[in-house]
Image (cartoon, rainbow, N blue to C red):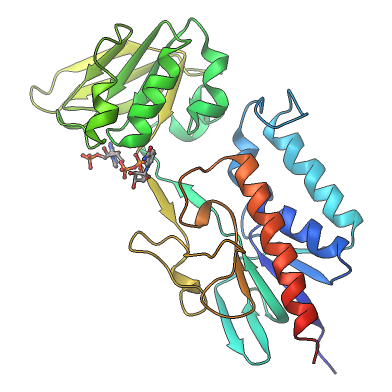
Length: 307
Ligand code: NAP
């Protein structure tokens, strides 16, 4: 029995991967897409998307569902399985998931996992007051009190963003010294509605249907503080998921894919897209843009390597 050879295997079913699948299929290529968890990726838990051009108000779940239906209508085959390995088996690639698939090109859009605090109440309240994206969700907390957790560039930037429309922003960090760049830290000076709470960790997130408060512990004194907030933005770093693919796509020192402006990775025929790549802006719009670029250059690669 001869095995199907797909033109493009897309690894990852977030906005970058699904957009890549859409463009690949519309260019007449056979496309198979793999997703090990939730189709849609991180965007699924976004309460509302208000920064996507021409879609002024859509929830993340509907956005992902629409995109899924759009790619299925173009004939993309969706496999709900985690890809554990991609191997070059010239002239094609072996993609190991629930079984081994063969594809002539591969687009890696494996996304990122936000590091989570792992405290009680967190999982239940994600999308109900607990968010990982101040740019996306901050405006829903206009004139409310919110917290940002973390001490890096993202946390400080999030606190500055939120201070523009929230009545008070608590910046909660496990140390007294912020890790963020000095230039960013300086911008906190004079921001009267940002309050820094150092040497402090979140012990619990409380609320029934939505977040109502954080239980905080001061690491020096052991004192417990109950902090009522409407929103909590976690900014404690990201975890790329790219190690299994480093044989075909080189990584930077932090584990992000290195990519050329065409999305081409270190192995000919492999392309990368979305948050998993080394880049400075990680937004829905940039993920979709990356997916487009990677797919169009994958199509160009396939047309140049027909035999
Ligand atoms: P990050 O630099 O890794 O900082 C994560 C912060 O979260 C650190 O302050 C860390 O504390 C804290 N943290 C980690 N695990 C924690 C836990 N379990 N509980 C409590 N706190 C915890 O992450 P990031 O700020 O998202 O930045 C990621 C990368 O993107 C960095 O390279 C950053 O420079 C870059 N970035 C750049 C910009 C820019 O404008 N240039 C903007 C955003 C991000 P400790 O400090 O104690 O380790």
